[in-house]
Length: 292
Image (cartoon, rainbow, N blue to C red; front, side, top):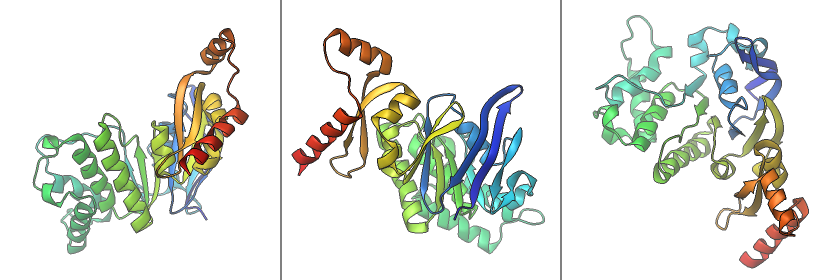
């Protein structure tokens, strides 16, 4: 079963087509990662799923209904989005930011109801931001700021979260802080999460479903163990890499070492055989034996 899907979806900006005839079903209750090179259509697809970008043809479906024909407030009760690099007015506190997530549920003059306040407090606690509720958002660290925005999305009370590169411009510790939070939300609250991710190792470790895109089309889709292969990396990113099991989690770990054409030329000039799926598989098998 899937609540969110696309059918023959075509997207573009002006006369430039980015995505053509995309058919995609997002599995419920899982973290789905959209991966691909810059310009592959990842963020464009996410914007269309969030009803920000209108399709040229085809459509996005939420619960079997075209999402672009549904009222904005109605869609916002089921689906929340965290865009790239969100910004807030100077001096806005964390609690004020999170309260904006209750907008779809408010009536009249936008006065917060007891249920609104309950959801705000719950979102702050779930993201570990209760202690920062009165602090201005622009005074937070990068990781804290991202958690505050995620808390706003949680306060909407939606079953589906869309996140566009949630770890961009964050250092390693703050990246892990955000990814661990998303993993927790998925496991403990069964949230369906669709995120655009540039770090392939983050995608393979934290997502249960990978969609690899190139030129607006899906080239590979499925479990990380199935999708994350040397062949996929050549086809989608034009790089050569070994895929080995993560020593702690067992998730596929990408070790890139060069661009595909350059790597092949370099190996040939030095009399080194090119790495293929078979030799990569043998390497992974050797690593597994060494770890046992």
